[in-house]
Amino acid sequence: MKTLFQKIIDREIPAKLAHEDEHCIAIHDVSPQAPVHVLIIPKKAIARVGEAAAADQALLGHLLLTAAAVAKKLCLAESGYRIVINNGRDGGESVPHLHVHLLGKRPLAWPPG
Image (cartoon, rainbow, N blue to C red):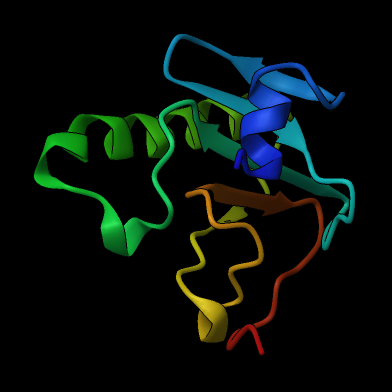
């Protein structure tokens, strides 16, 4: 079965795009935890970062560089932003498809709770 994110990538479910390239898609989260909350999702289905393989190294780096580029595009670079990758139930993972959260436009406390 396809995950929610695979359905979005395949355009079976609509989403507000922030970025797309041959390796990933970036969408605005439908339940934002900050004024800017974008998800950077690889087009390759990897369940979670803990299951990524050595062959995925370039893709993982691409996701982080894309997060930084989207942050700049959305004017987050000067004030700052947070990048989060959840892994597993206790890590807050809700969709079993690796994705990077980009959050900004408000002060973010630490620890995150």
